[in-house]
Every structure is written in C-alpha cells, then in structure tokens.
Amino acid sequence: MRTYLSLHPAQDRSYSPEELDMLDALVVRVVDILGITDDGDRNEAAARILSLYTLGGRSFDEIVELAVRLHKEGYAPGGRRSDKPPVQRIRTERQRRGLKSDK
Image (cartoon, rainbow, N blue to C red; front, side, top):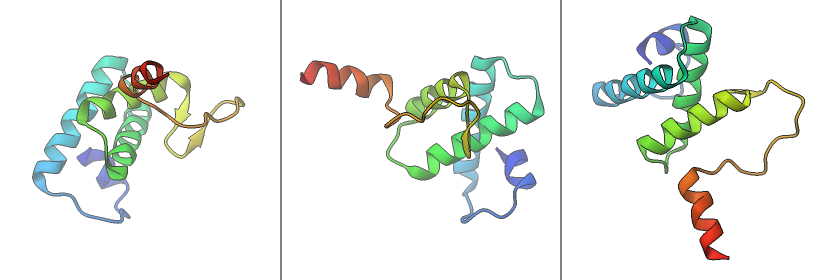
C-alpha cells in the first residue's frame, strides 16, 4: 500500500503507521490469493483495497473477500472493464447467506 500511495500522492487523507501496516498486510494477502506478479495488477489490487477500506463498515476479511472477487470478475477500481451491466450492490458471502436465510 505504501508503494501505491507513493505513486498516487493526491489522497484525500493521511493514514497512521498502524493503518498502513494493516493495509500493506491486506495487499499482501490479496496478491498471494490471486497469484499476482504484475506491478499494474498489484496497484489495482491496492487501489481496490484502499477504496473498500475508505468506505468503512467492512471487516478486514470482508475487504479481502471483496477485493479478490472484484478482481476475478473484472472490476477495475474506478469502474468496470467488461461490457456487462454493473451489479446492483456488491455483497459479501456472509451478507448473501444472511439474505437467503431471511426469506
């Protein structure tokens, strides 16, 4: 994450060292899960994680799950790379299970 932020210094806020350590760990987890070796894909993953983290309201595991799923489905951090229509709302696996049990 520190590499991504150094390449994109125009961020709306600054992050504490603890937040940066946690965000770095999230990037490493997502990169390992996806087997990313390309710097461009790594920066995309970092941007996606930062976006999800900044929105708030999600656990670290949910951020990892969503970042992996969005990468696999072709979502770029700033939009969509494919011509498929956008989804209504992105939900975590836990949220989808909760919706099914509510019915």
